[in-house]
Image (cartoon, rainbow, N blue to C red):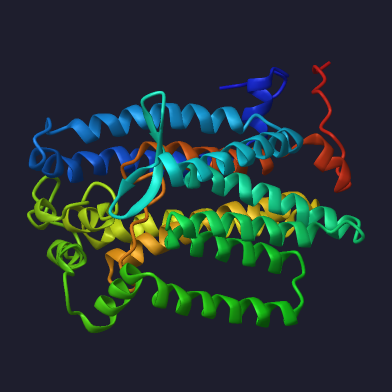
Length: 383
């Protein structure tokens, strides 16, 4: 335990960090490791790998993800912006490169191989995009003659164009929805709400018309016809688990779900640990989002307010989409459950995002001065 009189960087970090956020993130990481042992052995055995191949790799991914999250949490807001600008430029270059040299999986190019590692640039693009849009919105509000809102719109168009070109419509909707919420936080006029809402509806209709796989998934969802094996098995796993589950390692439906360790790990949690576990997982995500939005609401600095609001929004929306797919509430879409689903790029990228949240919500002395609080005085020894 660090003393309050200790002024070292680590001690200062410990006493200024939002420990509720930190505990929630660590809980999700821990659940990801536990559930990987429940969900991945059947998948590994099916493709001829060691039973705990994916579980071991999940631990290997979690260790650097934890380190990255903690390292980013030491940064201040200016360093966060600089890091995000560099990351945004690099990921935009990789997003273009992936269209030409990326690995094609199921008709989409979303991965690029660097130094033997497979990287999904769109995962790392999201936090950088949120931070830069937050800065542009804040600059426009601080000085209206700066066209920050216009530049944020142009950045959105660029990012969406690259995502659609892959194509990755799930990330497109996630990014666009987060941007819209941030714009609303920045004082979006009602006229723009109507215009952007109409544009969103038009975009969904265009995707249904232009992309056959999108039309197929929507049709399957609406009619229940066609190959709905995986989502049906995900639902059956939840039903089989009931309230309290069949017990760790005792799940049977999970053995036939192709992506039980990734997109459908939530269903595995429901089968083996019951709906109680599902509600517990949902409550952690809800806590993070609500605490983040509440913190953003109380924040005096515009950039911090928009950035924290945007980061927890994209985090929460991604979790909601994943869980809704498992519950057959929305058409099937391959999207990971943050910190819990298997995946190296996803783990590291989400760790960066949540490290930014920890950094931006720290109780910094300059914030206390702005809010009219006196800095704590060093304790005096008793006479």
